[in-house]
Figure (cartoon, rainbow over the protein chains, first blue to last red):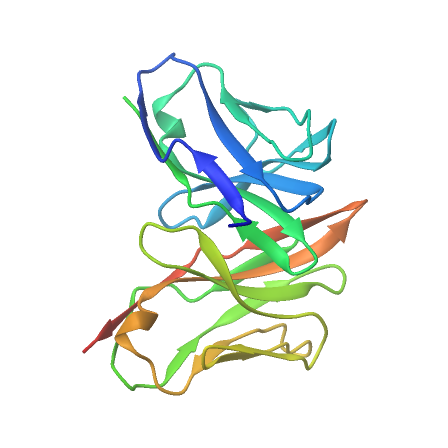
Length: 110
Length: 114
């Protein structure tokens, strides 16, 4: 089924560890973005990309890196995880009918 | 900057009750407005949208009208069901430079009692 695929669904990290959250879409959308969802704060934009090779910062970019080498993939990297990065992360892509979201990655940093 | 404010939850209603979830926005231009729904353990799904003033978005019995004069986009449903229990997000989208960004409200959790 066409859509946005995120992996993994769950992850526990120790403080200081690094990891990459994967996001892939098969709808040929140019625009992709990463959000984090925290209780009572809605969704906050971390980074976004308007096409392969182009990325920009969102509202809360610190502690996260992104790259966009292909239209399909938009991975989010945590270089040195901190407990404040415990959250649910959503990847989204935008096409003519609006945004399509992945099912999320629940990350816990201990 | 642009922002979205929606009523805080949780909202608890009995089945077949009338639902209103308030949403107001501030924007510098002419945004598109959206309601997204998030069921437990899932990502957000687009529920309805409106792209200009006085437009009414509707889907699955839910409706919302884009009111420019009151900068509002309230979500309504005449008779809710248990299956409507979810978190609802109001959002706006504007073009910034060459890209469109979406800004979400904080979400309203809705629980429907049988």
